[in-house]
Structures are given as C-alpha cells and as structure tokens.
Image (cartoon, rainbow over the protein chains, first blue to last red):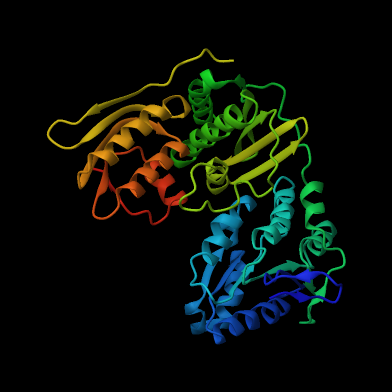
Amino acid sequence: MTATTESGQTAGPFVHPALFYADAREYVAGTVPFVRAALAAGEPVAVAVPGENLRLIEDELGADGAAVRFLDMREAGRNPGRIIPGVLRAFADAQPPGRRVHIIGEPVWAGRSPAEYPACAQHEALINAAFQGREVTILCPYDTARLDERALADAYATHPVVIPAGSGAERTSAAYDPDGVVSRYNEPLPPAPDAGPGLLRLSFDEDSLSAVRHLATDHGARLGLTGLALENLALITAELTTNSVVHGGGTGALTVWPEDGYVLCEVRDKGRLADPLAGRRPAARDQRGGRGLLLVNLVSDLVRTHTGPEGTTIRSYLRR
Amino acid sequence: MPAPSAPRLDVSPLAGRTGFRAAGEVSLGTRGIWERALERAVREGEDVYHLELSALTFVDVAGAGALADAARGLGGRRRLVLDRPPDALPRILDLLWPGLPGIEVRTS
C-alpha cells in the first residue's frame, strides 16, 4: 500500500521522522509515547540512542521496558557505517514478518567529531534507501539545544518528515534530499601527513598483498594497537587491498598513520564505488562474496569514503 | 612496492580421523587451494570432518565465506569441526554468518 503525503511525494511503508527536542522533558515526551504505542500494538521496538538518553527512556518506561531492546548508540553506532547493518537491520531482520518494526535511532549527538559528522549525515540519508518498502518506522531524535545549525539543517534533508520540538505533530520536510546529502558529504578526505616516523606508505598489487598486510600490521603494533584492534587492522588491510586488486584496477596505495587516539588505515585505488550502500547491507545468507566492506564497517571505529571519477579512498579508524 | 612474497597454504590429510590440516594463510593468492580442500570435505560425506587450523595465521572474509558455503553444502547431521582456528575466524563467521549451522569450533 502507498500513501501520498501533502507535498505530493509517494510514501512507501517505511516511515523515517526526525524528532527535534531541546531538553529532557521534550525528549521523553517525544520518545516514550512512541515506544508505548508499539508495545501496546504488540509490535517489536528497539531504542539505540546515547547512554544518557537511553537512561531517560528506560527510567520512564520502568518495568514496561522489559520488552524493549536497548542499545547504547555511542558503542553500537560509534562507526555510523555500522548502524544500518549492525544495529537497524540486525534488529528489524530478526523480527517475525507481518508486524511493523519500531526503532528509535539517534546517530547524531553534540560530541560527534568533525571526522565523524560527514559519515553520520550520509548514514542518515542512506537509511531511506536501505529501508525502502519495509514496514519499519525509525524515529531519529535531534538535540536542538546542542547540535550546530548544519546538523539540524541536514536533518531536514535526510528525513522525509520532521516533528518540531514540543509539537508532536509530523510535517513533511520540503528540504528532503537524501541523494544530495550523500553526494555533498562525498568530499575529499583531509590529506594524510606527507612524512613522519609514524607514517607507513606503500603501493601494492596482487603479488604484494600478503607482504602489505604484514607490514601494515607490524606498523599498527608499533603505533600501539594490540589484541583485537590489531587483528582488525589485519582484516581491514586485507579486505581493502584485495578489493583494489579485484575491483579497483589491480593496484592501489596503502597509508597507515596515527591521529589523535586512533590509528588510520587508508586504501586508495582507481576504482569507483558506484553503490552508496556497499558495505551497509547485511549480505543475504546464500550470497557469495561482497562482505569485505561490510566487515570493515562492522569492526572499524569510523569509516570515511570518498569516491569519484579519479578513484576511491576508504579510510578506517581504529582506537588505540 | 614491497617485494612480492607468495602466500603459502599447505593442506595435508589428518592421520587417524577424517579431515585436513591447513598451515599458512587463506587470502587471495591461496583461496583456490582452500576452496578445493573444502569441496573435497563436502564430497567425502563423513558426518564429522575435522579441520586442524592451529597453524593457520590468517583467514580473510572470502576464506570464511568458503567455509560458510561448505557448511551449508553439508546438510543434515553432518558438520565441520574447526580445531583451534585463529581467533578472528569464528569472530568473522559470527559477524557475517550469524547462526550458521554445520560448524563447530573447538579451541582446545
């Protein structure tokens, strides 16, 4: 079934409103009735928001919260590229068919870094394509008191409907333009340093894949990665460099360097990433291949991508 | 560009039980060897097929995928038993093929 909104756009079954709130009272007033309505209808509901907001909702729901899946978005959604496959679809796809799935997802908060924010905006825009045609509602709270103007303006472009602070009433967003947001934030990444003791820069082809993985991993260890993070660096290096060899023109360049509390691993090649949802769909069980970028998204603390006619750059951040 | 270094994967039959031992790494250069060994495992038709993986240093996502495919190809009561695989392998399987039947992991 399709419905036509007041702007004349054809809306499918997927519902994706932005909820604006200025304080805890507005937050609870906008989110808790959403959860209670889903529970009353016997429909599945998940809440994936930053920890302090999670507690607001949990406290208000009390014992009724037992049927709700709660996730701290600061952990589960630290990498925005992980949220669609690892949080939203992981929950929605696990529910029995025939019942609408309800999720509160808050991927944008005031502490998001300048490196993280473009990935957040692209994520919010891509939710629309990822859930097209699904009986799912994803409500996205935005903190009007602490987010900057750009983040609030982008919310109007990434959500087909918005709920102004304190109003409770949904209205169509005239600025809705998810494709525009995806391409606007497909921006060249700030360059890696040119030199320095912490810098490893190598070019590679098929014959050097194995050597490059070892060199990158050894370098990551020197930069302070241990245990799981080091294992993840080996996996990320292997998947990105192998993608370049198989799909990205056969060769590429790898750079590893430290930045703030992270080790960054970047792979550049001549290929073009045509599908903006690459690495964000949970792969169908019987599908062969195509899971390399998904793994990179699932294990990285942040992934940034820039793709265009000159080639593709994918940068993974791992916390030290 | 670093000097080329051909990755190795040595596969040998186990003594005393059905299965193989794999030593080296599973990556683009050795994927064919790994896939052929797993295809043999599926064809052999034993209920339990052991993969002794303690000398495996690395498995990429495609290598884990070949294992997932092999497990799916078994059907019924049959299963692949992974003996002491590298830590990342069960983690990749859990992340990308959650709930996959037909694989048992033994860590000791």
